[in-house]
Image 1 (cartoon, rainbow, N blue to C red):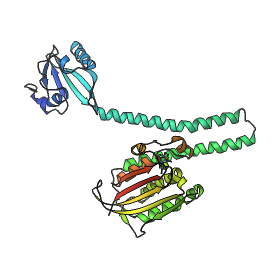
Image 2: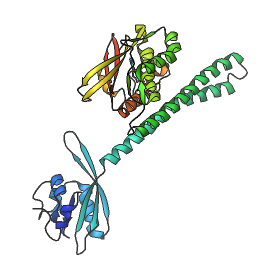
Image 3: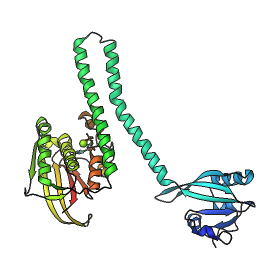
Image 4: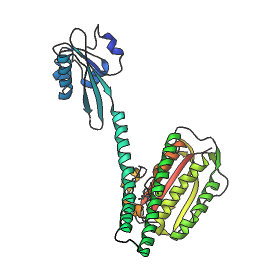
Length: 343
Ligand SMILES: Nc1ncnc2c1ncn2[C@@H]1O[C@H](COP(=O)(O)OP(=O)(O)OP(=O)(O)O)[C@@H](O)[C@H]1O
Ligand SMILES: [Mg+2]
């Protein structure tokens, strides 16, 4: 039995609600509360219905003082944890109305924000600490030592450059995230984009002794997209291939027609960015697009990586309603494929 008059109106409320009398016996339970707490609760003492002490305490306090009280209620099953903010409000004539507000998504968002701030602070602190150390050395032990100053200043310039790159990556990430729901409408030609990526990465590839090439057909391929963002996607992927897979000496970009991609559910164009380097264990693949996630953070930092490149790629690909596929085999190399809806 659920809410009876005068509580029938509670059935229309989407959040779980329990009403008790002045002796903490359950008078009414609306359907969402039945789902949360189980059936046949009316008439029982609230202790047997809501078994979490903080909530029971809040109910007693509310009854005792006639004031609104609050508590948290956590519901766990095998996979999920749902967090409720419970508000106990005194009811006229004695009794309490207990409402459960699901605050899981706010809590998760809050946690993500805190993690993000902690990560950014950590990433900035390392170069700042190093610059501070050099300044102190130049002011103290190495004062007047021109050779040391020269060396330290070069390192400090590098650290400053790293911070600038981090901040500009963060800005482009937030810009891309902001636009994620706005679909691009421009028509762009894919081969032109890939050629310009190879051109601009030429010096980086040369310095690393890596040959970069486009393989496969070269006929014009038009699709709907944001040209600057697509350049960024393939630049990030090709740059990674050179930086982390450059040992193979070769990076190949190739374009393929996909008649029907089962996940996108339609025809697609696939661009593979393949290297023949060290590769990485499969366990990393699903985390690579997380912000600041690196397979080998030492190596990534050594080559000036901020760990944001693939996060940016993922958001841009999402905005284009496409998908990113990552394959890698240790010792053989990696292949990052971008699938974009055709047409
Ligand atoms: N082709 C690849 N071969 C091996 N590891 C790779 C490859 N591409 C990416 N990775 C790994 O994935 C991690 C994340 O890459 P991502 O591009 O997001 O960050 P980054 O290159 O470290 O920094 P950024 O791109 O912001 O300068 C890298 O640190 C590296 O460990
Ligand atoms: Mg990168």
